[in-house]
Amino acid sequence: MILLLDEKNLTTQGLRFTVVGMNDEQCPLFSPEVQQLIAQHRVFSGGRRHRELVADLLPAGAVWIDIIVPLSTVYQEYRALDEPVLVFASGDPLFFGFTTTLMREFPGQVAQTFPSFSSLQMLAHSLRLPYHDMRVVSLTGRPWLELDRALIERAAKVGVLTDKKNTPALIAQRMIDYGYTGYQMHIGVRLGGSREEVYSLPLHEVVGLEFGHPNCLIIEDPQPTAYDAPIGLQELDFFPLNGRVNMITKMPVRLVSLSLLELERRRSFWDVGFCTGSVSIEAKLRYPHLLVNSFEVRPEGKELMEVNSRRFHAPGIDYHIGDFLSQDLESLPRPEAAFIGGHGGKLIEFVERLTALMGADGVLVFNSVSEETLALFREAVKRVGWHISYETLLAVDAHNPITILQAKGK
Image (cartoon, rainbow, N blue to C red; front, side, top):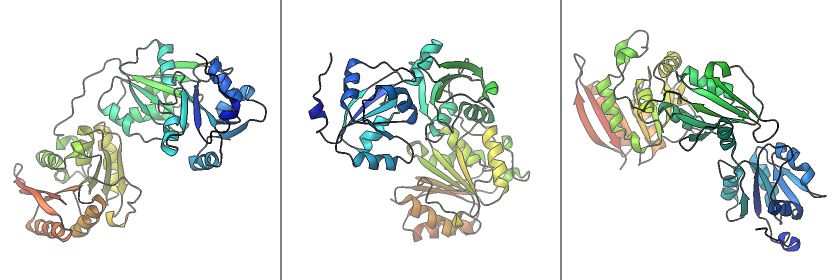
């Protein structure tokens, strides 16, 4: 059915948006309804690539607003209007698309959307690859978190939306660095038109190659295995600090500490004084949804975290080297749980800063190896108005007993 629109009414409705999805076809074919909308609009918006593709279809006197970063500038141009805007977007505008952004910034002002096939749909069809079981992540201006999670959880098939920064070569190198080498990468370039290119390559062949933009990819494991979250990484498997194996948090102590951090229902975890990275690494492997930020004052921590996180296939741990109390932490995700593995004699100050950042709904875990640090932790917790919510004494082999404490604000 063709919807007949009154041009006069269309231009007097105030700011509203119609979003039209499209692919990379050089002479796009739109439905009669969309063609009529194009003819009746004056203001259009989209990426520069979209403008090149639809330029011949726009009416005389058309005004175009480029969608470029920072988007705040684009929003200002929209808000200065008092008439409808027709926006061109790639693929399905509701699939990691611009419509979601518009609905957030302009509630109730998105009037219509017209989908096209998403790039990942077109790539799957080019490959004749069923995609009903495919996990989808976006790296278009987004962090690595969801791709790292998919890899850790051994997802057999993952569709990845890319951008000019997060390229197929960069993604392939990251996967190789962390030991996820069994995947094959399918890459689709400028899908949906005569310029379409599709490649299927092993990861090592993708590294160093440049592909046209826009592109997307599907990584596929030909021999998928079920994800089995590890419980208890062995200390001797870690690369230690200066050969000192005793500096690693012992596996039984680590497991109790992780359980007390309640990470299954937290989103952001901080490991302060990570040393070899054992707590951070096991946390990331057991709870791949976590944003993990780790801190270590010793410069050697950089090598230790890089070697050990790769050894255990644990991507996505953000580490920070330097004095914890001197670092600017405001740009980091607020911690919901924190483990103090080292404090350099400033335990009270560490507790004060962490609890201030977490708020009363956070949880803090500390392992005390002496009566002195045990008393200091109790004092610090009391000083900030928190309380010790759990405490246990654990001895491993011939090592000194360790008191494991959990503190909460409420």
